[in-house]
Length: 286
Image (cartoon, rainbow, N blue to C red; front, top):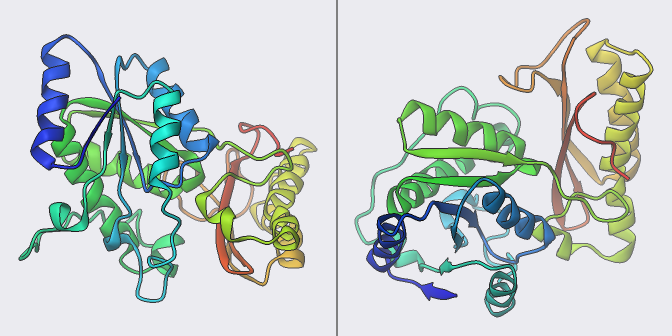
């Protein structure tokens, strides 16, 4: 496995791989890798990538002024070991100055899809995400890129950006990887104490309750929202949103629905956690 930090070295490595007939697979991360990230590596291989690239970059543009940029977990040595054990070919670890040199003033912004939910609670977040991912796509070149669907809105936003800008990238969303108790795997789970981790299961309990109601025939969006909200409010310190939305457009749904996604964001102790489930499609959390 090779590791590079220089932008042009990374671009050249990807170009050489394609020239040799390889299909490049990209897994963008902020490090602190866990089994969810490693599942993305497996997925990109299943999608035909023979040259697998993982990027590790804690992107300052996607953190707000009062968010956890300074304490976000950084475990590069362990990340490199995990990547090598999983058969990654190249790890790209740029620094802030390389990605955003002095005088940097160009940003990529998707309208519409970015406005509700995470966009409303984290102003500027998606502008930072789309800017850094557009840069990574430009450096990597034609590839297949896999993102976790735990960040469901992010996945849809990046799909939209890629289509709108005609970027030569196949964007794939991978199902959520969960811990044994049902908690969605996240680097921020490291912030949780044992008691907080137990309370955090309220998110997956809310999703499971809504999914069970759906399986029993409930199709009213307001009823499904309240069913999901109950376990979350019982467990969390505060709730940013519990919403039943269209899985493609992310528009809130009213009345009787034929397909629906439940989105949740809540605070438990020092961690802000998100989770989601498409009713009747995704498996129930354990």
